[in-house]
Image 1 (cartoon, rainbow, N blue to C red):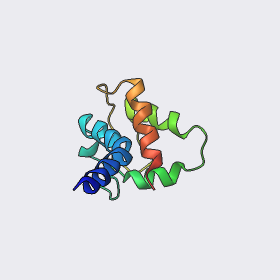
Image 2 (image 1 turned 180 degrees about the vertical axis):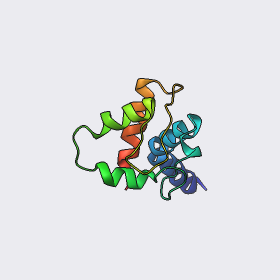
Image 3 (image 1 turned 135 degrees about the vertical axis):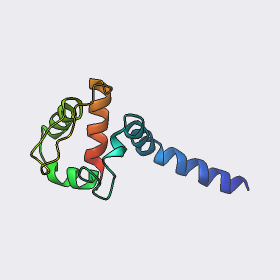
Image 4 (image 1 turned 45 degrees about the vertical axis):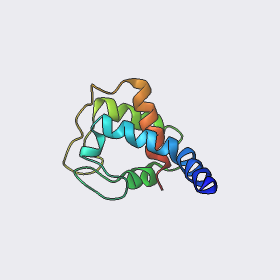
Length: 101
């Protein structure tokens, strides 16, 4: 029993940051239009990460799009602005999206 609790606690600690950022994405309504691994209204986060891989300014670009919205990059459906997301949250979300592989 003690070993099982240690393994479970380790799994929670190791998954913590990923879950925390996905929780932020859920709290800010990002998951309404996006999913990690499949297209919904907008592209999957894995697609976004692949598209911006290796770009030095990718996190800043994505953070700005998260806050201000955008159009034309992923098709005809525009991404609306998200005034409920502040700059620090947008940067955290962008960094998390870019880790999705």
